[in-house]
Amino acid sequence: MTTDDLPCYGPDAVTEAFEAADPADPTVVGVVLAGGTSSRFGEANKLLAELEGEPLVRHATRTLLDAGLAEVVVVVGHEAEAVRATLAGFDVQIVHNPDYDEGLSTTVERGLRAASDVDPNAVVFLPGDMPAVDPATVRQLVDAYRAGLGTALAAASDGRRGNPVLFDQRHFDALLAVDGDVGGRPVLIESDDSACITTDDPGVLQDVDTLEDLQRQR
Image 1 (cartoon, helix red, strand yellow):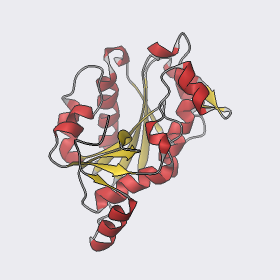
Image 2 (image 1 turned 60 degrees about the horizontal axis):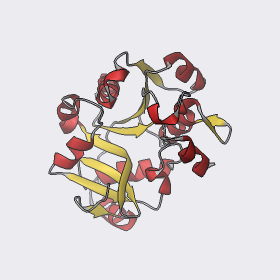
Image 3 (image 1 turned 120 degrees about the vertical axis):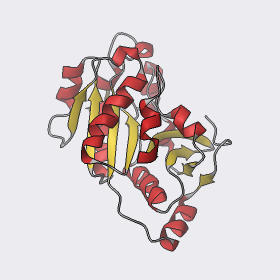
């Protein structure tokens, strides 16, 4: 997806807005979306495929942990126990989505409801098949949010919108109302307070849907 339909702010704009504001210190929870069936990847579960010696989902989870968020929730579904086992040693809350085969929206819902237990101001969603996102990118999203640049923010690179995505609590009801095999994209597009945060992080565009995608990242 291109960024043409949303205002965009680069690192300098985020820093300037942050320094000019009196930013609050919100509670932001991270959610790793790891419940899908990997239908385009073949018979194997792509989240368990290894990159640099570790499963993809472990890379994605570490990204949110290293970003210094208040809490990290991982939503599992397909082959839940195997995915859960890859996260051993991580201080995360693992939530099972028994309805994962009904689409991504059900995984978003489970993650959001689990995150809501700590009454967060905002939630950052990261798909479990995106192992290359820099934790600094997550922190940049949070800084942009704290600086008042938007309440629905997507990381972007090279003129294209990607992940992770941050949503303020005012969007939680809309996220819970989404159906089918989509995540927060409809809410991001329809909000009048959405923006892209431009980064130099190519990882925000690098998901792994196929074996070829994985080979390109190795």
